[in-house]
Image 1 (cartoon, rainbow, N blue to C red):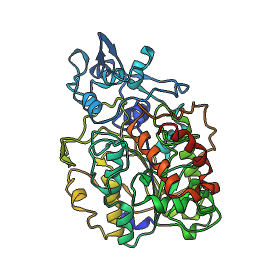
Image 2: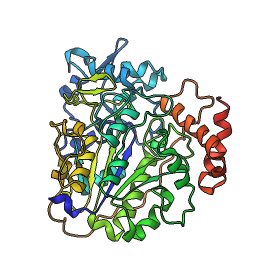
Image 3: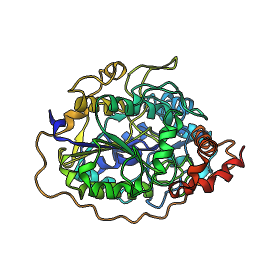
Length: 453
């Protein structure tokens, strides 16, 4: 099995961009992806209509970084998918602008959700596309927001159908599964704040204490990203599965790099370039698979309808997946400049882990029930790509405004309010750890959060 060549699997999940918004441009320049078309008739078929005006697909300037956050919860996503396009075009995927307008952005910004970036704005992704494999049929598992889709990625099922503003319900995660199956793992968190599953009370004590460890101390399954280079330089002690999380826009933040609007895409390009440069310079590179994907489409246009995969979530019956998200497979064991078009969603990550650590067996019954999906392992080659490791030059982030931390959080997203709950619980339960250098950034934010109490 081709996955047997892989000793370390690195998974990076970014935030809130659609495939066409980020990678649709590739098809305009000869890459054989299911992306955008220059044909005016094709483009007109997906034109959105709102308040007497039409809004067409269009290119965004690389300097267009700050886009007010489009709605991307269950109800607005339903509008985005289930509204007809203008002028008798596509019978669905016509509600992106109408949904965005409900957020009341400046009038000039209404077209932003129909925009797409090109290589000039996405140098890291353009490099990945030329040297590794793009997945052009990777869908968010559910047509809803961040939390449920990240639970699907890390559990194969979700106890919630939409974002919640407090702690997540307890449920088994991939961390538990990997431990049960004897596979080592760790999580790296960019910045000085929280990984996503600090929102689950079961994991918070370990996360807080692990991240408080001095950077020079080995061990801890949750680590600051500032340790990443040193760990990979000593690659003999790397775990078998590595999760890397960005600094979240919805959490306390100093320099978010997760791509979640209004944070621009430039910091994320620099973040992912740094990960690749570190991994590709390591002795472990020849046995590594790095996967980059996104939690959901973030309210941005995509031209491909969701897959018909019904999923019952906490008593709510979803009939389809969410929309497509950008995704890459980065390894010496994938086709350079390749495109994998098998249908995937975030649960495909879990099946890949089962292929690797459960002898090709199952991860769970809910994951196995998604029989329409392809296997990520089938995108891997049996032999390594010959030649030298592709070199990505260092990137300097473009200027990108840092979204303000709002206090009090009234009116902010449910995810932002949930991270606030985490911060206040850390102060309540672990005040002694806030004096740790690794938690100094959070200590500075506590007063801001308490202002919203």
